[in-house]
Length: 257
Image 1 (cartoon, rainbow, N blue to C red):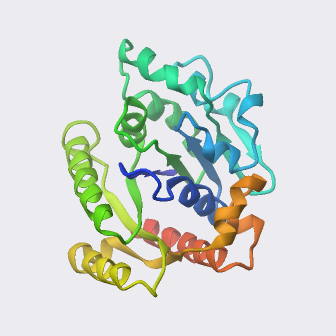
Image 2: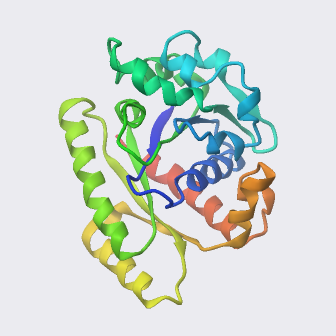
């Protein structure tokens, strides 16, 4: 059965989508079957996987409204080696439509249950706000991977996210837990980043992943070519870091109950 993880952080611009598509590509490279679910109406994870969001006949929007299954709506990212349940601007309308529906926060969970046998990992790219879409992601997940920059404001945002996860754990999804914090866009030359990194390790201990993703130009360039950085330039520092992270993730998931 697939292990389902949200890549979430209520702060924008911290590299959620970069983390999602590169972790997916890294997992695919180490032999895992992966589905990426794009829950952001901007559709960046879809485009970053080499799939044209404008050309999609079916998206995660149709799956949430139960007019299509994941098996019908998913697309294959041939170059990256994983499947994508894509999103486009249509998804913004789902926010309003879901409010009126029964089991509104459980829609994605139900859909994923039907496809769970097909994958080892499902990675959900969540929007930065705590919306009905993010709630669907968190209600269907076994855990949350939190990408964060080692900066002062990032710590404040993390407190909000931890509180949100605690509430959802208590009321909607008893399986939900923080799997780990991933330090991204890390520059060891900046003293503040090193200090925040040490604070994170002191406070969260083993919840902080050993792998650190460096600030890397090739990772930043890759989306404009419609590829994850791991595929775009497999020799780059960023690609190596994400493959290390994929291996660490497989190991950590193996130790989960």
